[in-house]
Amino acid sequence: MHDPTETPSLADPVTGDPVRPVSGLPRVLVVDDEASLRHLLRVILERLGYPLVEAGDGEEALALLDAHPDVRIVLSDVRMPRLSGLDLLRRLRERGVFVVMMSAYASTDLAVEALREGAYDFISKPFRADEIRACLQRIVEREQLAEENRKLRARVREQEEIDGFIGRSAAAREVMAVIERVASYPSTVLLTGESGTGKELLAHALHRRSPRADRPLVAVNCAAIPENLLESELFGHERGAFTGANRAHAGLFEQADGGTLLLDEIGDMPLVLQAKLLRVLEDGRVRRIGASRDLPVDVRVVAATARDLAEDAERGRFRRDLYFRLNVVHVRIPPLRERVDDIPLLTEVLIERAANRLGRDVRGASPEAMRCLVEFPWPGNVRQLENALERAVLMASGPRVELNDLPAELRHHGDADASPSTDGLLHAVPADTSDLSIKRHGAELERALIREALVRTGGNRSQAARLLDISYKALVYKVRNYGLEES
Ligand SMILES: Nc1ncnc2c1ncn2[C@@H]1O[C@H](COP(=O)(O)OP(=O)(O)OP(=O)(O)O)[C@@H](O)[C@H]1O
Ligand SMILES: [Mg+2]
Image 1 (cartoon, rainbow, N blue to C red):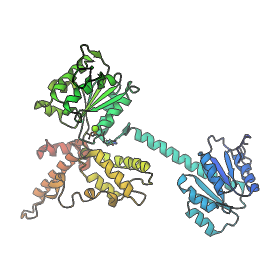
Image 2 (cartoon, helix red, strand yellow):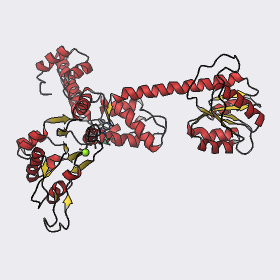
Image 3 (cartoon, helix red, strand yellow):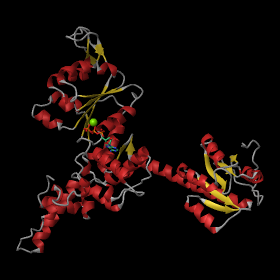
Image 4 (cartoon, rainbow, N blue to C red):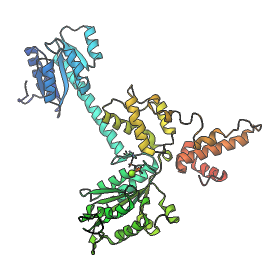
């Protein structure tokens, strides 16, 4: 074992040219049973500036790799006692290191076998110093390129993600922009969207991006707690306030003091409590049940619901005054089927996350699988997509998710009867019609296509125009003409 202590000379060992100063060269592990060869490689590598460690056989090499996780390149002899080079190579396959095999008994067969087993390169002994240099240089450049790509991808993705919420559709970008803009203020935020659209994710993003991030985020599901308990959960109670109140209890508002309180499923909060909540929001003070004094609290409230609060308020199921108080900043997250642009990106990222979590080597989806994913209406939104992809990653036998890896209900969706939104398309030409006028049926088809485009884009006309391949102006005209204003 040897660690370089002398300053490496910065001259090329062969040409004598100055080697461009390189910082952060990867550590190399040299494995050979011949001490003289290790010595030779040490001289070469030190001159090139590579930090290195040395092992006399495969077993020792494995132990050294554990001790030096920064080793990126292994230069290994083939014939060695104990664990041979090829066996070592097989053991290293999962480790993500570059293995270069060296042998004096170089035959094409051996080289081919080494490469097939995952070696990066094969060098026959005796070698020249510049062969070693060129080989290592290729690896370093390849790594740098990969690193730059990784960084680039991360940067691109950054604008398409805040704290785990991903999207690139106009609607998703708008949601992210509003979250970013309001996060630092104490204003109440109302998040609405169908189940699985990421309301909870965004509540966490709001908290993390606020000056309150180092204080607690306390979440309560208003639908999950029985009505009689919810009040004391939220506002707390004094000892003896009611039967069973054996000790005083600080409510969630007090627990969230200085931080954020997420009132999830607020649409399900009983009306009586809604009145009390409104008072707390307006006064910034809570009173525990059974207490005679108010306590000041500094809490940022984020409310979330899958219900249509405006309609509930209209019908008297939700207090109008509370609705208006919560509605100051209202972030509506459209269902996934109305922002199909997000599906390919979500698919890519969610597959990557699932694969990392499950330790599987799967990336991306085949075009057929992607088409299926984009066409499915996703009633359970991103949560459902996430679950389907996790399953697909487990099922996948190849390097990417194929159509067959997707759950059957996705694959057969639309087989027998069309989804409601494509209904119009399929029935644009009734089978038993005697009228074959292209003009009349053409208009019907056009109307159906426009309707479909508007449904898919959540009524976003510029996006719909793009899907339909017509100008925005033409679309506005046609929408009026076909009486599709409500779509
Ligand atoms: N835009 C998104 N990008 C990445 N992941 C998302 C996105 N939206 C939702 N998810 C994921 O989907 C799952 C459901 O999200 P979340 O719990 O935030 O939904 P929700 O709107 O609170 O649903 P519910 O109303 O059922 O409580 C989570 O695993 C979340 O990480
Ligand atoms: Mg939720």
